[in-house]
Image 1 (cartoon, rainbow, N blue to C red):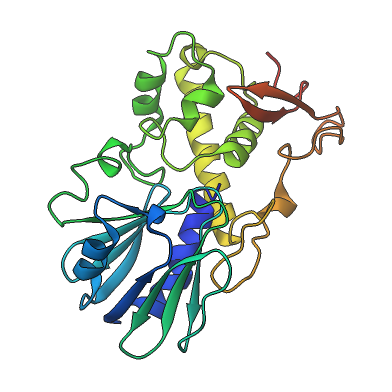
Image 2 (cartoon, rainbow, N blue to C red):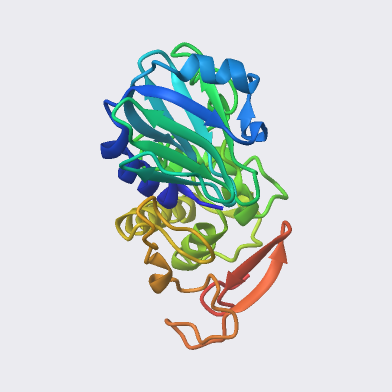
Length: 275
């Protein structure tokens, strides 16, 4: 699933292409993608709208319209492909937006898990799913002390699963949680409540550093992720533990191990991240 760095990269690529363009028509080839409205009503709301900007909130893409927002979640395999001219949809293309300048934006999703829905300016941040999200990791209000207060209530929850919770810390998924905990020297199974304030602050700092570097490198291409230009991310070249099971740790030489935690593959160094 695209995580915060991948979604941020998609937004940065789409912003200059769609900003200022007016929607002429929308073809919904698979209505399963649309939420909150039937497809016909959804199209009616979009036609004539101008895309003012492309923003990100957590792992959501927000197309800011003249009136309201188009909210997109890519889920596992969702991708946007911009085209300078009207282009025939290919297999797994489910939504085609055509602009008045005859350029198009195609939404492609092999698994059809992605979603699109409309929100008003008044409800965009006050109704789920966005209302359930914590502050952005880069927000100055996300301090180690504030994060520690939330984690210390999780008496039995492992720190890795706690960091997945988007109401606790926004944007982290499997790749970046594993990398963050390795850099912070924290074993993924440790109860979240057992971390000291200093350890939580270290986790926060490392998470921000990991996410920042991943954004600079266009995200991580582990399986099928590419940005709207078709280019792969390169942060996977900097991974210490994720996907490295059986390889020697780059810091201590101990073999990286993998286990299941909360139903997810979890990678760690048993020496650098002792229980």
